[in-house]
Length: 419
Image (cartoon, rainbow, N blue to C red):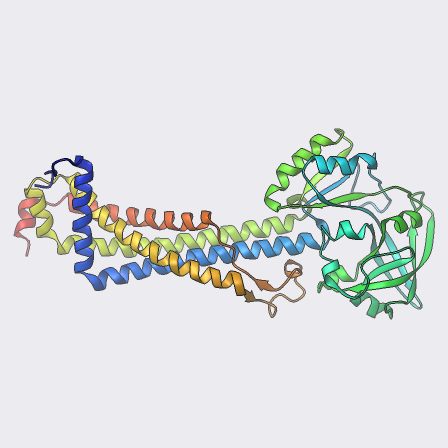
């Protein structure tokens, strides 16, 4: 009888062992059908792991590139700061800012003095965004130093850093002189002559054509804003931005500063990532709906092929609950074997993509989300592996529910008479 237990073993464990043995026997007995089902599910698991790893790598690259140009992950401004204003808005109490950042756990930050400016070079001119920076600190937040193509990133007095594209447009090269015209802190027009110390090229023309750099001290002198800064940008893991920003707010006087995280600074990037995630979830839903139908079809076929077997088990005392458990065990085993095969293949593929990556240079030229590099590398985490296997096993069990219910409704007499 189905309910007979071996001496010394709990009834539930004994029954589970019986169900496992019967389920394994049936899977092995129909090797071709079982292998086809397992292969179909394994491919789905493989796709889920690889696509999720590539999507995570894509988002990592997008964030690294977009925030590494100028934005940073966290920014600090004065309470009355507005990006549409052209007049300087220095931060209040600049002496308390560095200690506040360090106390909040933000160790990589860069003070800046920003202002609109006009470059005059012979008969050529161009409007740009002037940034006064501390080169060593700025290099911890942005990737301009990594994009140097000529000259020196370390800026001395009277030196300026421009892009290769802007220099070509203005007819400049390293060592040449040019003039900057700005509006000082007091609203007066100021000019200064500077020597091109170095050239950079991020690959994003819209950025390169509109940004130039002076040392912070030089910019403060030019703008008649000694000791002033207009913003501080910080770099940290994007996932920790909200927590660190909250800590920073606690360290600063209330109402005098505004702290913004990258989702506020680059809302287009945050929305694009959300769109990617939503699209991915929809594709996964469709993929596993097809998988569920395949498993359900397999298990339904199993039920019709094993009418006499289920009838015999019922006649021997098996309850509908026992029959349901037996069918679900077989469905779960199919899912387990498929999950194992798909996970191993997915780990191998993501390991390859994590090491060598996929070069997207042909598709990402002049794209702000790939300024940091065009090679897309997979990023796989234990959480993603667990999620992929959890979805697979849940799908396998859910797909076996209807066939299991059908098997439990069989009439023993009709089942035993079935040919």
